Each structure stands twice: as C-alpha cells, then as structure tokens.
Length: 233
Image (tube, rainbow, N blue to C red):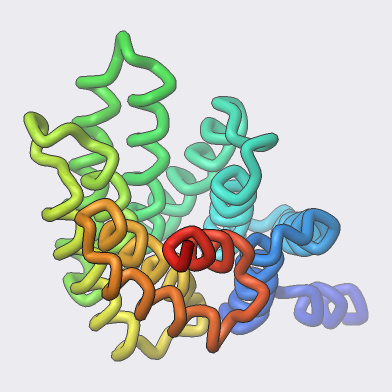
C-alpha cells in the first residue's frame, strides 16, 4: 500500500510539467544556465518513471527540445535524435496529441538542415507532422508558431519567407490569447519572432513596439533587450 501511495505522489500532473516548462523558458530568456540546467534535469528525472505514460514521454522530449533551442552548446544532432525518440514514443502512446506532432515538425526540420543529403526526406516528414498537428487541433497556437519558424528559415522557392512567416506568428499569438492549457508554452518566444520578422521587413516601429511589450512583462529577456538597444541606435 505504501509503495502504491509513493508512486501516486511521484506522478507528474500536467500542471507540474507546465511549472517546469515555464521555469525552463524563463531561464532561457535570461540566459541563466544554472537555472536552465536545474529545471531541465529536474523535469527529466521526474519524467523518468518506468511506466508507459504519454505525458512523461512528452515531458522528456520537450525538455530536450527546449534546452537544445536555448543554448548552442546543446544544438547537436544526438540531442535532436533523443528528443525525436521521446516525442515519437508520445505519439505512439497518444496518437491524437497535437503538441507532440508540432514539436516533431520542428525537430524534423532541424534534421533536414543537419543532413542536407536527406533534406527532401526530412523536409517531407516535417511538413507531414505539422499538418497532422493542425488536423488534430486547428486551434493549437504552437503549431503555427513552430511552423512559422520553419517557414521563416525556408527559402521562398520552397514556400518560405518572412512575409508568410509573419502571418503564422500573428495567427499563433491570437490563438495563444484564447488558450487555457496547463501545458502551454511558446507565447513570449512567438512574440519575439514576430518582432524579429518586423525588423527583417524594415518595419522598425512595429518591431520596437513588440519588443517594448515583451520587456514590460519580461524585463530580463536579454536577447530582446539587445535587439531593442540596436534599433534605438
């Protein structure tokens, strides 16, 4: 009985996973590496119970995804492969979980950049994952946010470009405002990308407005502070 009670107490809820995700992203914004690693390791340790649970698989995959996109030190292919492993496992355990497919779409896109000889293969898998995520939940803001990043870095000849990416980021931000999900993440980062797109489109005043809004909520967001300072100069 005590062992069963212990396991129940150890179970991660969506709210607890959301807590770790929130702190991971906050640490990334302030470039606090100690805090980033602490919450990364805490989440992964707590999500490493032996049972087959889609939330634990998602938590592991997302933790890896967030750290490899936060620090270039971790932007290595074996981290991408590890995140893919957990998120594909998540989709096997819960085939209708839109968020897992959205992150997979982004990870497959990274694989295409890291493996130019297989760019068509990974590019197709990325597109399919995003479409799957969208079909499962058309109101999921992370689908449009993450696909927007993919589109931003994709050449125009392959359907990419900053103008199209802007539409995705703007749509994602509208959906983020409506979302009530304990596992929600990506709102502030999506806003940063929108400001960055405005910069690249020579829409300086709009970029400044977005950056100022972000800094009102997150004064320690270092990348935004630096970008805002450059525009001021």
